[in-house]
Image (cartoon, rainbow, N blue to C red; front, side):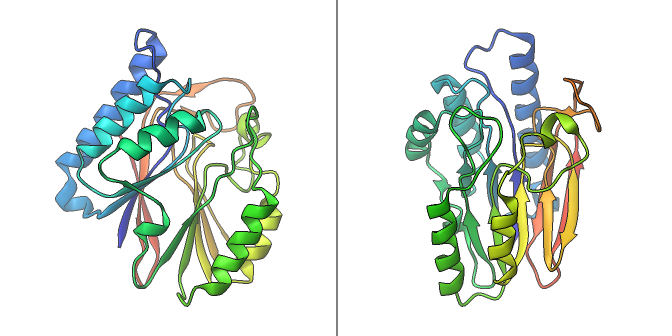
Length: 244
């Protein structure tokens, strides 16, 4: 099973600003690059970990889902702190190929998606009831390989601008994961590439599709390139990262 992991497209409903044009162009270029290399990438499903929209407007979601459906692959979408949940859910229900993260599971890998969004805040928190359900779900699965996806990164990536708004109860999530056969946690939000092994869990932050933050910055300093990850969920888990 090979999964294309994309995150943080930050599309706008108003397409006229310079930033909106850059983000849309980077989004389209990335999808075109993926399509041109489909045989090489050999991906069979897609997971998108939030901040689909920058402004939460309905047009931004229409642009996203229209172009994602053209890939004709099953894909799951999780919310980020910039997303309007109501608008996102409505657009997702109308999409042709959108499914849940759990529906992308295979016989050898169980996949779970979590909502880490706190309305009106940039930082993330997984609600207690969500953590409780996750513990029950992990206990109830017979699968020996589990992967979890969410928007907010769990541990500092070395960029103060985003590390102040990471997942605030990451220790609670990791505690549950360490008690289960969780082997991978994939996130976005940090607009940078970051990977770290915590016990038996590979924690991976995929680079943003719109642009990256300059490493180590405390202020808004943008590096205008796009990135995505391809995760191979096989006997030997590994990740390929592509910048275009």
